[in-house]
Length: 237
Image (cartoon, rainbow, N blue to C red; front, top):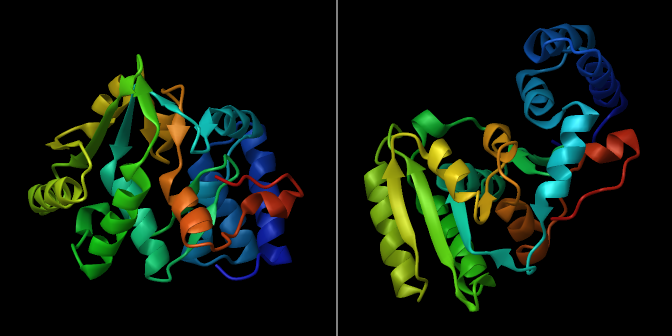
């Protein structure tokens, strides 16, 4: 994304003003984007990264920064997490949103392709999950990864993750589901969910930002933070 310039800063502020007045988001982005002549990537950053202050504050409070203990179980929104990590590894735009979550702008779910970079993303995910302090009544809890069935070759990707996790000594359940969102929300009732999907995050009490943690704590890289545009405290997940 490069430096967050004044033009984009003004666009963020204008969009926030419209959202606070309850104007619909997509038409507001079109209006702001046309005014400041934003390109498609900048408009996607607005769409995925700018929210009403009240919504952003609620989500920020849900984020747990590991190694704090995750109660009971951790359910991972597979493509959501892996695509964000992979986007960063490929040098694509990744940023921290106003609600504290790290997101990408690729939007490639339907066209996702399994590559060597995907393997590296899975390696990073495995390293992250290997020693997670998931606890339930004094014993180790459950780790689950859910993938979207409509995405091409999800079955093959799930099989690879199972094999890799097993070889890495990680006990997990990896499933391909037609509607993983509902399962993630269900699992979130008694555990934590790793996702930046706002629909899911708004319906579960505890969220984990795996891409944010891996990029900042494992890869030791700084992520552009939209909160800097508004002189708000940055979130380090």
